[in-house]
Image (tube, rainbow, N blue to C red; front, side, top):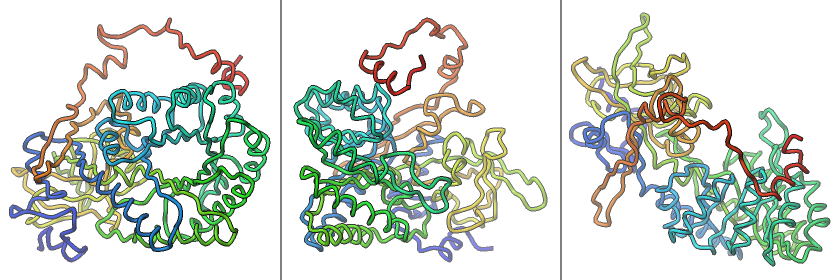
Amino acid sequence: MKNYIDLIDQTIEFPTREFNIDENNELLFNNVPLMEIIKQYGTPLKLTYLPKIGEHIENSKLLFRNAIKKYNYKGNYTYCYCTKSSHFKFIVEDVLSHNVHLETSSAFDIEIIRDLHKEGKLAKSNFILCNGYKLPLYTQYISELINDGFNCIPILDNLKEIDFYEKSVTAETVNLGIRIATDEEPDFAFYTSRLGIRYSDVLELYKTKIENSSRYKLKMLHFFINTGIKDSAYYWSELSRFIYKYCEMKKVCPELDSIDLGGGLPIQTSLQFNYDYQSMIDEIVESISWICNKNNVPVPNIFTEFGSYTVGESGAVLYEIIDQKLQNDKELWYMIDGSFITQLPDSWGMNQKYIMLPVNNWGSPYQKVNLGGLTCDSMDFYNTEAHSSDLYLPIFEETERQYVGFFHTGAYQESLGGYGGIQHCLIPAPKHVIIDRLEDGTITTRLFASEQGSEGMLTILGYGNNQTDNSSQEIILPQDAIELAENLSLVEQ
């Protein structure tokens, strides 16, 4: 029987820029020896490889720089990081070290902005694009940022949102954006996105509430495609429709000079991944330029808000196979010391596939397996790869140890899984280790968080002596926020 390395060699091109094996047939991830990390910290274990973040940011800047030069594009490019992909401080600080800007989604994002500014990590001149459907506390915090001189642009998501800024912003100028509601993919459950303002309402909103205002300036139109930037008839159709709308608005609104292309570049979820990033960016820039020239309007500055592309490929999760169970004549289960439902929720909720590779024993024969998690839920399993309907891993003896890794898991998993909270079957969150490199290439590691303990869980659930009685607590909102909430029927009378 052939060994696992033979299977990989005949299936995909290996090694890759990120993955290789050493002389012990053990996996290297970005030249980081994973077995050494496991020996030091154990499993289950989440990893963040920080250099990958800067690599992707600089690559994106290069892609747009090349396209702008190729087509003699007269607009600028600005990279924003979509904070909802990962809010961890070590992530956001590393992002900001590459001279980029931020896009937010909720009121608590603004608290993070304040903290970063206080520590000197974020300047007031940095762009802060505020997206999402905004509850009163969010609009209040946005208003305070603007009043305090931050370069904050609220992206209007509904027709009434602008009314709050009229009452709460005292700054002389308020730069605004408008999110336009795009049509969803043809196979989606809904025809038009629930977020944003209808194409037919954008001009009227500008005419009635922005054009004659002494303070409001419409600076940006926001375009978002949930599926991200991909070469499909649907994407190019929606992008063209949006750019034509930009041209229409530019002719009546001279201050409008920017577009925000939401929905990011894809990340690698298979070793057979094939995506021509430069060609896609070239075509986007060329399409914008062609439509604007056709309509005799200046091309816009381009903003992007890449989230998964920024942090996704920096993440990995490592498990140990703790048992083998043959449940019938052909279904062999490898049981991991963690849970897919709680620690990789996208693999469960969206059937998302990640790059899955054994960490050790690449020189051993292989067999078809199913991977099972620790919860009692029948859906806590992983049994296919992105490029194959089957899953194969090395055969190992009971006296041996087998480890497996899931890669490019750096976006969304902690927030979707409820980091630090209550997990299904009370499975604890794993240890989290941050990996970095010094200028001379030396690998450094540090423990960001230990495995979640029982005490914190029990406190949340109300057990023990540390519980807090919240029954008499009152939440106080700013009076303006309460009034607006009442006007918008957000607070029941």
